[in-house]
Image (tube, rainbow, N blue to C red; front, side):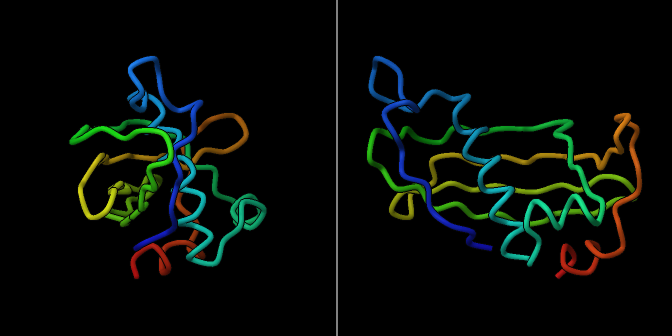
Length: 128
């Protein structure tokens, strides 16, 4: 699902003029928010469901570089929904060229940080 675009800013790059690898994780965090918004859930809605997806693991592939003012298309797909976790796949592209690909596992946690089941209100939209 295409969830939006991200324009690379000066703060995203280091002295060589390319995006720092760690910044791609920040961009994925923005894509995470936009993915749920596209499913009809604002941050406040997710809190009310309740869902607090803590990033537990991420595999990342850095396929190309990006520089200031590049516009990255953010695509997110739900690859799996488990009992208390879900897996999202991220693809960031620039003019149809893959720049970054990541697969992230999130665990739904309660206020104490204990894993808790994915709410039923999210299961159907995530499976769609």
